[in-house]
Length: 630
Image (cartoon, rainbow, N blue to C red; front, side, top):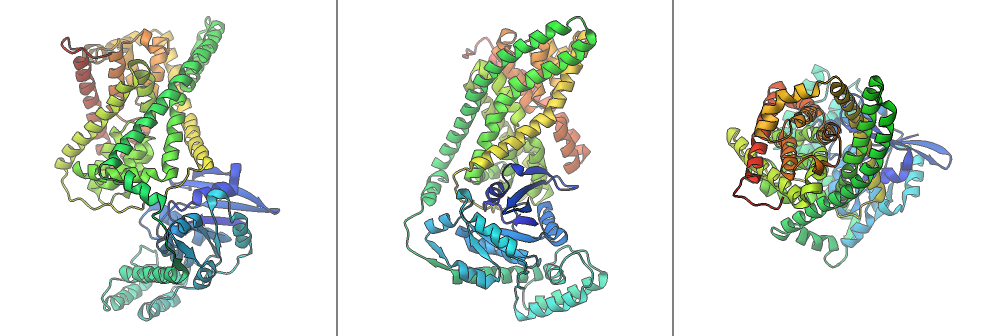
């Protein structure tokens, strides 16, 4: 049996999915798409059930890849039952999507989640009446506590009947019936296709059907509304009517979450708490990473040296075995200690509901640099990885907004850059210097964003986004979400790291290191004030940013960088790494999303800008008249 979980974003779908599938879940991509696909197995009373978690969306139109994936899976793959996860505390808003799923005609059960939050808001929901009005089973659940889930699955197994048709007003209903009768062959239900045609959606149908749809739209428009507005208005009216009939309100005090929002979204205190939480996050990353890295370096260096004795007289073994060992040692001891806490904290912020509040607070800042408030969401993602951040710029409406957001995203220090900043600057120069670099990065983004806005002027479009309910972060979500990202790093980055250390080892044994370093020395030594050999790290850093510090350890022969570099030199390396050309995967995505000219222009600009900026900072920090605690 196959079950599909469908619903809006932030309704607890992932928590329910994790409860159902446990450790059996696995994540890949939808065929031919970059969108993540989560599947899992459930054994319920001897029955094997496959569960697919569809992307969190708000409609079944063709505006995004996620919407196309969801509707195609429900209509074409025909799961045995669709469980529509609904946030009971905002029932009316969620029912708009519920009515759209019903139109696809698959057997359906509604999981009425977050009943506890609805109660805190003073809402009493008549579940039986709601089920009667919709014509589908409705099961109240609290996914975070596991309540109602067994009953939900039992109901889903029994449900075989398709939902009833939602009726529209008379003139629209007549046109839907006429079109549905004319539609013969399609992957979707004829009535659903007819509704989509009246919504002016991009549905592939025969030319004669399109002509009939155009005539129907003209008839509807004579009543004063465009087709898509008329259909949406009908659905919203139905959602409002049903929720009004099924919800009764009782007096309650101001909910705790509302009082919390009054502080966290305050026009002054909100920014104070945002900075406080950001500071605590970076402090936690540094504290954990520094302790773990120190311990692991000392242990793994011992293993590396022991292996080195065995291979010192064999060039082939020295290149391959030595390169592999150095790559693994560097990746495990330098990169992972800082990445693990970063991804855990990011998962906590997202699952708690605070991430959306951060985006809300930053909207006014984004406006000041001429970017859309939604651009903050890709920028926030970019602190994890620039690749999905560049892809998520698609959420912006205009090409200009997407271009500006993509440019800003490439300047955001990803998790790999965090490894460099924490492993070099925070560990040796001090956490205050690491935080200063992040402040400098924000300042640069603001200035360059403002200049880019002047080069590509346009009008600001207001920000509309959902503010999810606060939730106690679910341990399963945090562990699974963090593990996915860490596993992805290990699977993708470690082969590149190992290949790079093998190459460095080969170049070193062939005696070519000094020649390459000499070619790069006018920049590395002359302008940046770094040892000549460091130039190679900047070359390899284009593959992946964390390679900068890993190659640094390989080239300098130690991971105790304070013995071979000054604090100013470490800050200089971190500045170059933070701002210069994005990694190769990001450049590839830039080419795909914006074209090779934009990708090349951004890459060249950032190389030149990073080198100039780092050189200037190095000169400021070493200027005789300036005395800094370095």
